Length: 336
Image (cartoon, rainbow, N blue to C red):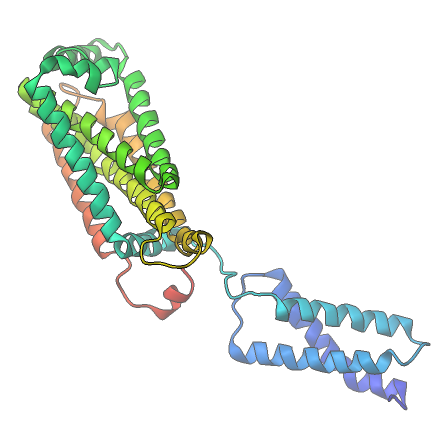
């Protein structure tokens, strides 16, 4: 019970003002990380203000003071009792260089499965085309790939020297196809992984058939110079999308996991978002390389240079995915 209101206000006002300042800082930066002492102090001030409010409510003659304390206590209650443990600022560079490769390695079994399925499709497609050249029309979906490889090589090189375009259209077709494949590879995980498996195998068939067709025609150097610069990043991106789709499919099937499907999918949702986000970054880079580098051939760019760039990209990506984010740093683990 308050016997001397003026003395009560004089004594308690510094605590109210301190609580207001602390709340203002937290509200100004919702992602601010408070240390233990700050949290304790905030809680002490909140409890003190709540006790003061209980005393002031007995005074019918002080509506303004009561309203001020009610607002202060409500703000403090909201900040203290809101789940803030997951409210961390998103750091794109830290996410891509640490969280993404760590997640990929943690789910490496699904990446290995994705690679195995694509490789099986490539062996099948290459074998079928070598056994029956007329199968090209059924195996290769792009008109630019239907003709003889040597004719296309001559046409591409002539178009560059004469200043005529054409390769940009084909490049756009390939980019669109691979982006669509990557999105579908994840989305088809909703079919319990069956659709992802079929899509990976089919695209492996296309890759295998193209490689077999150009190698059989003696155009291996052109093939390497054409595919390596962007394919060294684009194909891994498709594999990672397949990895995400297979992970989703496995969560939906739930072998050995008695939790409800919703709980199983929720438990892998963060990893799915990370894998798809990393895949999108890789596809964006591959698209730029494909548009401005891969489709430029000799005599403008030597094939040896293009092959060297492609191999360097592949080696760099492999090292990045294998090693990035391995350093133990408690702070970065806590705030990815």
